[in-house]
Length: 187
Image 1 (cartoon, one colour):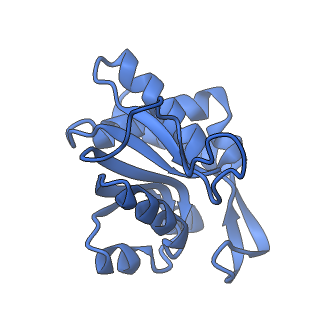
Image 2 (tube, rainbow, N blue to C red):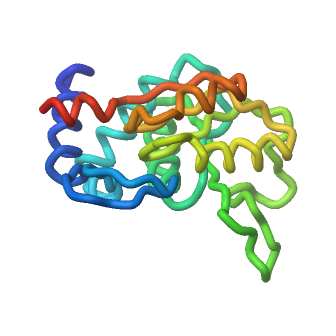
């Protein structure tokens, strides 16, 4: 399937499985009359595959070492991308950032790295399923930067177009999205 056909098919899956109308309160605290819940798309076999393939295509030339982000939205994305990157012969390892470090065991804030391995000096992209103001992704950025990693990009599947571009711009971070909310609102 061509990239444009894959993008069109994924758009339909997101529209059918993950986009809705109706009043909701967003993670940012804002009210909205539409929402995206990408979990049904990320956990659908075809949706997960298309998200991973399109994300891989968007990132393959960025010379990345790791992909990850804040739990829960980044976990299925990072895992699917790690798998497809291996299949394509250009492995990008995955991790995720806990919202709150575990209070038992190793008490880690960043999960997925083997003992003794760190993100220090690594090129990292932060991924997110849906981005409104960018606050959630910035939590992941801050945690990852504290390890000494270089955050080279924030990539979201759907940008709600409600301030994230400004948030990441102010932090000196490039920001890209696979889709914009306006595409779904017009459809």
